[in-house]
Image 1 (tube, rainbow, N blue to C red):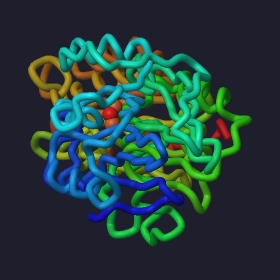
Image 2 (cartoon, protein in one colour; image 1 turned 180 degrees about the horizontal axis):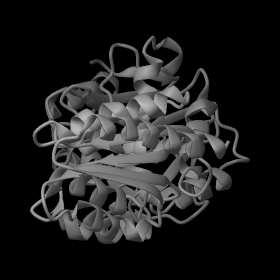
Image 3 (cartoon, protein in one colour; image 1 turned 180 degrees about the vertical axis):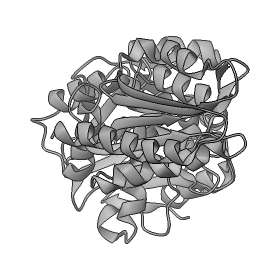
Length: 400
Ligand code: FEO
């Protein structure tokens, strides 16, 4: 894609990534893609705000060439050091060795650790300013969004907040890069939530602190480093991030995430009866097969829904391993404040329930009910399973 003008002398330069399968080597984006948004300010002094992954460098430098000679770049402002935004740093310094790198004190340390860069680094603190000639940028420290060095850059002249990962999302650009020109808003909001829960959610208190800190700054454009640029309704993505961050400690949506796994179909039969019971009560339910769905796609439902229904058989006197993996990730992501219930088949000794309780213990989920059955479910078991699902849904609903 060519460079895109955001405001006079301010450009989006970046690339669509539809090739990488795993973001951070972990989260699937094969079908969704991702963007690395970088920004060029062509003032008397020329600055690039965040770079991009070491990927499609020719395309990226051609975008810069449309606007200015890359060797004339004065500053690279590093809001975040993760290599999806800094991967081209050494290449750019080879072309433009006198460029000054601007970042927080922790960025200076990370530049040494990741790239052995010690020279031409300017450290800025909270509220510090940098004049480019016709405009003066201001920096706000927003640590742990989601690394310790993270900061945001604000351009008061055009009221643009360059927020890096914060307010970003998965999803390659499908033509339109601005929210007001985008006909796929639902896709980007869904992928922003998945990105939030995969990458940022562990730092939800930091998200709320940053939003509060920046509340009085007039912002017309939110320019993150992944996903859409929000200029038609810039408060939309901030409000979404605020809502998702509040879910870490406050009331979530009245729905149920039903995660299940089944070896030979017995737990699957009961799962359908449980789902019937839940939907009979009028509570929305999202169903995921733990063995066939990457946890990246399950986490958004776990994060946003109040109820968690876990269905898994005993496997080697313990919990069906794909379910253990999902729950372990929920622990890592500190998904708390849930009502939970468990059902599953066992052949002789059982053990799944005990292991499940052990895994979720740090989350302090309210385990309201359990339903275990021996071998294949009987007709009676299936009737009980539907009632079990309905009872759980009533509890979830009652909290409204
Ligand atoms: Fe987009 Fe934390 O890097």
